[in-house]
Amino acid sequence: MTCSFTTQTLAHQGIRFNATVLSQPSAHLFDPSNPKLNAQPVTQGGRNAAWFVQIEGVAAVLRHYKRGGLIAKVIRSSYFWLGAERTRSWAEYGVLLHLYNSGVAVPLPIAAQWKKQLGGYKAAILVARIPQALPIAHQLEKTPPKAVAFAVKQMHDAGVWHADLNVFNILKDESDRIYLIDFDRARRLTVVDSKQRLNNLLRLRRSLIKVRGDTGQQWYEQFYQAYQQLSQA
Image 1 (cartoon, rainbow, N blue to C red):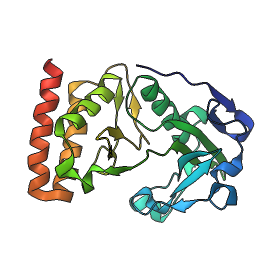
Image 2: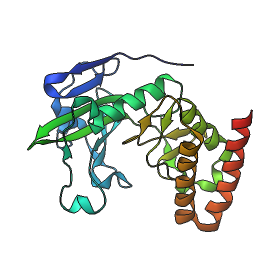
Image 3: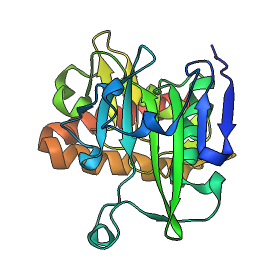
Image 4: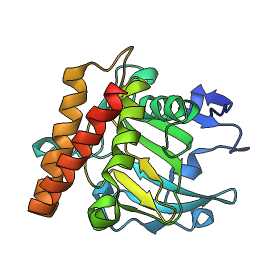
């Protein structure tokens, strides 16, 4: 089952938004100091740049794009300008909307913004919050490997390669539904080939072992077997 949403763009403000959810988008929606958002910091992940917010009655997550690694010590939140469509925020919004409309369990994209500064730009994105959901890192024993395998394969079949598939970017809610999150730097392709799929799976494996050790390895083996079985069906 697929859904369809209307996307509109305010080019002069660098805002692309889901008109089905938002009626009056503005730069204030991306400012966590705006009291109307009732912003609460996300305590895990997000590089200290993510907040739970309320947008027109919708529970959402606001995330500012921040660099990681050594370059972050020099340039923390600015990116080189290569055109509006290639900004991190608009690109992720597009991937999320494609996946959501394809029936993949991902957060509904609400809005994305870029703002030019000093030859570069800063960016932010708003997505719907998934209620009562936690990373599988905290509930691996209760997470069915086959359900995760199905979600990951569904993403691949929709033509998307995830840039950082790990145990914190896969969520499970109270009804045991699996969600994939954080599609920054993800690639939308005509076909995700076997090498690219394996790259995602091995990245998840490294994350599982790093966080959960032998338990993570055993869980991955079941996950991988399920993924292979789904691929052969």
